[in-house]
Length: 447
Image 1 (cartoon, helix red, strand yellow):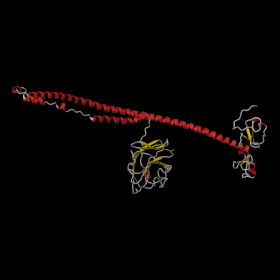
Image 2 (tube, rainbow, N blue to C red):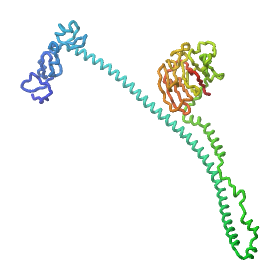
Image 3 (cartoon, rainbow, N blue to C red):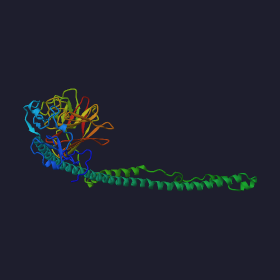
Image 4 (cartoon, helix red, strand yellow):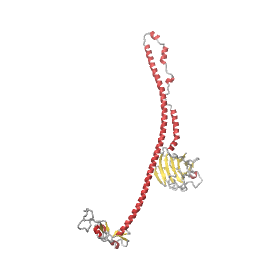
């Protein structure tokens, strides 16, 4: 029987003395490696532990007692020899024969693999759902972008048409004015020739030396009349300006029409109409040092107590809520903060604590309120976690959009309009607009 030449790294059968035959297994008990032929006649008892061919049998021996490793300590998970069990540090521990421990470990690994396979399947399903969600989000964003582009194209077309109308009016007036100016120019140029001719004739007459010829010529009065004839007022004074009043009228009417059509254009491109929610401040919630205006739109700080009647809803902290409870749908309102050097605006759940002047009631400092604030910097706060918000200009007015069912609360800077921050949340109870009023400050709900 011929065998291929083994490589230098191959383990050879220790019983094939006439040829170099690769070993199939190594017996740790015999400390020998065997090919298939000699393995068939090898002892099958448990003490003869077979492993993959190895030349490092010393690694299979106990480093302390230099005996074959035959057991595995169940308590410590260590591979040990018989001496470790009898006199060593594992004396009295429960041990398993190496082969049994090996089978147990393989069974344990199989269980782990089975669990990992189940987890892998679940992970793949989740990944597939998220990839689908990612594609849906990208598709939805592309659709919205296309509609926004179409909306602004519609508006641009209307504005360009209005621009063309105004410029056509300017061109019409320019054409008429230039026609009148050019006609007057022609008259003046003609008169210039006549004057030049008269001057030449009179100069020739003046230079003559024959008295009779001069005296018998055109009389002095006729010469004066000929030399001094002027154009009429209509020829000399021409209105060469453009009437901006008519251009302004065209722009005024066009822009009013454009403004009236904006919501229609928005509806054509299937954007929902979000109307302002008419909010009012609730005096019964206002701290005693907050003055509420008669129209319930303005809240201002007062150094003197307003001596409000005590109510279960009233805050011990310098805050006030809206009367309106928002528990479904979409809502939008605007807050003028231009008269407040420092301010906090946002929303709060109806169950927010009122009678403690601490984090339990301060809006933005608990899990029942979400806020945008400006103190030393512009930022957001929820559950006493603050995050900085960047803005290129001072925020004088804030737009707040609550999508109760969708679970979104967004803040916008007005003039210029830009998004500042959006909270994602699951709203489970009525929401109210909320305001913290600092000293020397005043905020106002914009109508």
